[in-house]
Image (cartoon, rainbow, N blue to C red; front, side, top):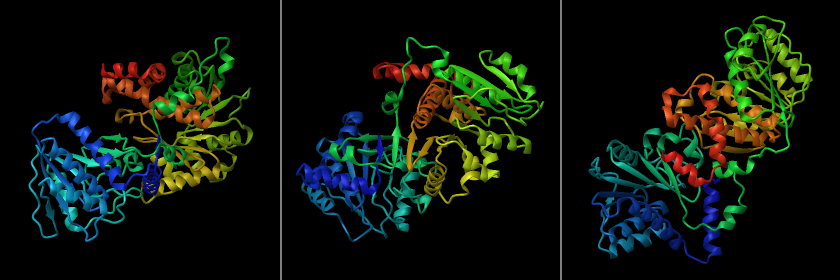
Length: 512
């Protein structure tokens, strides 16, 4: 599912109006009708006080039109117009006249107005600012937003929480609506998925307001939201007449004294994801534990007892996953550097291997093309430098990925994959996965998919989704706090089954 910029949404509105030969007012009425249908389906005429706060632009026009529909169906409403400018959109003015014809008289809030009373039992509809916001709200509007946030009422935001810009972090974090639910029009917004801005969106849902399918299809988006619908076509079914060699030979390199468990986690996940063969390369101290904990994995050892000092491989693997628990000793960094020069198989580079690259940037030129880097936030900062906000981070990360021809995985609540100037935003995963070893499992999953012949970008997109889905399945059974990295691996098979199951089966399973 595409994630559009504000300008692309405006273009889609304009295209729809011209192609379908309708007015902008008709499009606004379609949006208001969808908003009303969503609310009405849940309230069914329940007597609750609905307070609508409407700006004087098109977002406010949506709110005014919604107020009229709610009134016509017997709901108790109060309409507050936030009079923050002398300018008014024509569709706002048109809908304002319509509600007056219905004997609805809005309360106009100005800079010197008293703040309206809001009860915790009220429903607040936020339609003050839309996607066109290009400056911080005035102080008095900011006080109104703070008043709404402090009310403890259920806050339903129209399209986007007021005060939240589309293409940057908020100017003033206190002047943003903290929405209980966002009903967004047609396409999701990138700000819903970034750490600094996603905190203002508790839950969100898309409403199809009738934007023309042609413009949605032909418009290229800088970001794409990845759900089950996007993942299913990437799946590569297994062949009846196949053998272990059909599904590739993965090499997992890592570990040091006291950190062999990271290699165990990655190796086990690699196998469970379907790699035909897995060999682990570890220091001598890891031999016995790997042979006993993951008997399906073949083990090669370094001559060094405690650390990796020289990587000698007797075969050419299809893919290498490296870095888990490996440490940053000078001899280990040298061994990694030599491996980069000698091996051209794609690599999944994680953990301390990333820290070695950050300390030795000249090594970056030797990374095999389309290798996959999986940093957590601090490792990412070491690679690309500090950033001002999430948008600056994304731009710097895009530049880094393009310059070094790598696939960059920015891990987080909504992991974002960057390659060749485009981003893919993941939709699976949960807070329980913020636990030791979770990243090692992800490295193993992606490595296993590359080994089986998945193109590296698709392996990364699929792997990130599968990793989060496995974590979601376990958390749904045991709770967030009980999630361990090893338990994520046990749910990889269930994750595959969910991806391949008919949607209604998945829905039934999620309902319990």
